[in-house]
Image (cartoon, one colour):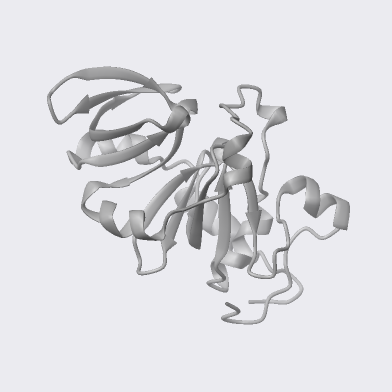
Amino acid sequence: MDGNQPWAGLRRHLAEHYERSVFATAGADEERYVIHLHGGRRLLGRIRRAGRYDFVFASDTGEEEIVRKIEVLFLYHAHVAEEVARRLRRDAKVAARGLGPIERVRQRRHVKNKTLFPFMQSRTVLRFTTLAGDVLQGLVTAIHRYELSLALKGGAPVTLMRHAIFDVRDKKGVCWLKEAVERRGVVAPQLARGGR
């Protein structure tokens, strides 16, 4: 990684991944997903069709419902559910806040692509906390417009919705949310190669 431009290759990565969405591919792949929603609700089944702001979900019993994407915290393939459950943690203080979806984009807690990319390139573990207090710790494997692809310890793939992020920290406890980064005047972390 070039120390002068820690996000070298970011444009290439975004050109390939930025517009991709798990909801677009899930409707075609017939895979079963576990979807974590605000309010502690969990869905198990298939994503049938996806619109811009919602999707049609079909449970294993065949019942269909329309789910607003903003209600989704994160999701993963059903076949890795046990592995994800072992890795999933809870931040009781954040959960106790009872935060729901943040409808207004400007009020959300953003993480810049230029901040995430060096962590992804150096394969540095990050700790993401959702608005509901779920804690996902792992590697960023792809950056998308509305989602982040993560690999938890052991390799279990999880898709985290960007609108569901409450906090993101490195192993030293440094916050990498946009507002914290801008306060520090540091756009991206300075990482050594392979820094974990």
